[in-house]
Structures are given as C-alpha cells and as structure tokens.
Image (spheres, rainbow, N blue to C red):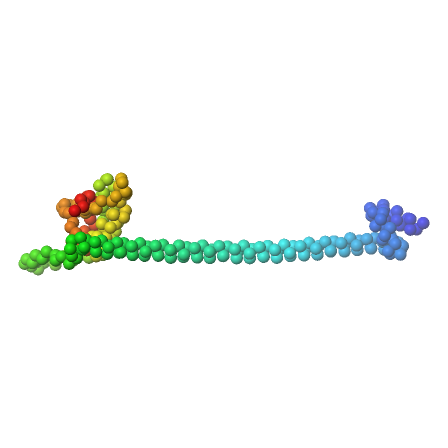
Length: 238
C-alpha cells in the first residue's frame, strides 16, 4: 500500500508513470524522496550529456569552418598564381611576337635593298650624296651665344594615303626612309584585284619626290625629324 501511495504521489507531482515505477524499483522502494533524487539525477545527467554533445558538435563545426577557410584561401592563392603565370606567359608571347615582327621588317628591308640594287645595277646605298655647301662666315655676336640645336632620337610620321585616310607611326630618327615605305606597304588597305602597286613618297611642303637613293638615307638626314607629313602617290612601274 505504501508503494502505491508513493507511486500515486509521484504521478500527481507530474512524473510519468513508467519513469516513477522505474525510480521506485531502482531505489528499492525507499520512498518518494529517493525516487525523486534518482529521477532528478537522471535529468541532470541527460542535460550534461546534451551539453557535452552540443559542445562537441560546436567544436566540430568550428574545425570544419577553419578547414574550409584554409581551403578557400589556398584556392584563392592558386588562382592568383595561375593568373600571374598566365600574365607572364602573355607578356613573353607578346615580346616574342614583337621581336619576330621587327625581324620580318628588317628582312623585308634587306630584300628590298637587294632587289633595288639588282634592278638598278648596283648598290643604291653606295651612290654618293651631293657635297654639302661650305659654311659661310658667321658674324660674331658678343652679346648673344648661338642657340643649342636640340637632338631628337625619334620622329612622328603621318602618311596620307590616296583614298584620303592617313597612317601615323613613330620611327627612330636614324631609321631609313625605306622603313616608312615598308610600313605603308604593310598597313595600307587592299586594292581591288588584290595587287599592290609600288608607292612613291612625297614630302608635304615643300613638295619633293623621294628617290630610291633617299630610301637608304636616315630620316634625320632627310629633315623629317621631329615630325613630318608624307604623301603617298602611286608609282608607275618602270
């Protein structure tokens, strides 16, 4: 009768019947207080286990977060390294293409020189230049020093084509006029029929037609530095 009273009392206090019966049995039916202590200890134990489990899960989530962060950082670093490597390869490729283009221009100039030398029966570059006039006496000016002539190492050439368009390019002052003609031949538009007629270069003002001998002379020597405007006229083949 005492057990029944203890069981009923525990049920009235809100404990489930199954848990109350188990508590009384495990405590040797020593009364309500012993059963309550056992059930409260069981609740506290489950609470501790839940807290420990939550703490372990939190630690695992933090490790995963750090691991993912490290993987993301490593992936970002690999991406940056790949971009830098691709940029370096692109610069090397552009430099190689530029060197190859310059080599093709030099070879084309040499071929043109050889063809003109063969066509005109000798080396065009060996033709003597007209003698320079002897300088006359310069009046002395004690109060004013002569101006210093500026030396340019580059020149900007604008070439006007027969169709009204123009080409602009910067050349070295010591490059030959043949380099300008070759640049025009490589960059002017295709003519109907696909044939490219030879070009004749003329100076803008005063009007002057450059000869084959002039093609071997530096731009600086021809008075085209620091800038000049040239006109392209079709040259009738001889």
